[in-house]
Amino acid sequence: MATLLTGMFSLVIKGYSLTDGPPGFSVWSVTACADRCLADKSCYAFFHNKKSGLCLLHNSKHVTNRELTPTTDMRFYVINKDYCPTEKGYSYSSDPPLCYRLGLQKLNHNAAMAACQNDGGFLVRIDSQKKHDYVAQLPQVMSASSQPWIDGGDDDIENEWRFTDGTLMTYTHWEYTQPNHDGDCVRLRLYNYKVEWWDTQCSLNHLFICEIPTG
Ligand SMILES: [Ca+2]
Image 1 (cartoon, rainbow, N blue to C red):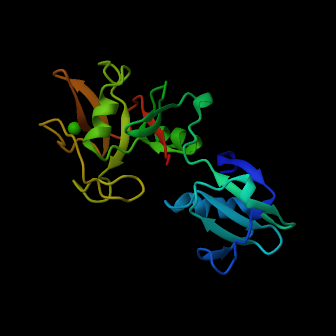
Image 2 (spheres, rainbow, N blue to C red):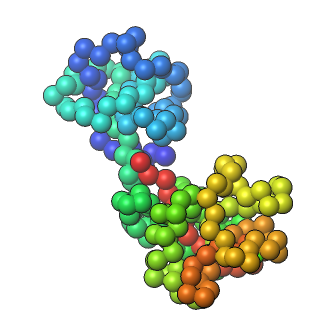
């Protein structure tokens, strides 16, 4: 998580009262405080007191150095939620917002998930028509031999498709003969000139698409 931090200042906002701010947490480490901020959609920055462990989330995108004055123990951190590691082969799209890469080797579904987790992400979660359309037109996906894994499975309850974080998949884009229950995982497949979803045995080896959350 430390790689998501940018612009560290040993400064605090002038006149900012700790009792006026959003709810605070007492956490031991600055990375634990960063994790709280990452989990909160409205958080863009946070204060952390290295002595007391106090962690205060902040929702302002517009703090400048002129508004800041130094203190000894309280530090102010800005989170860069749009971080997309192009050095690891990721590409960034702004519309829809998506930081993604295509895995270059064929792996079974578990190994593909692990490869994405190793990057700080997960197999791409397609949860809208717009996101499906974007992923489906990628040249690597439009190759008939590609057929990459995406996130999703029905291994707990047959035909109840969920992302690996447990969220029910409310958007799907099955090919019209699918799912035909020959597997608990999902891959994209170009067939009859369309890229659609096919349920597939998780033990088979396929390319895969990773996503790192942004925004
Ligand atoms: Ca199938």
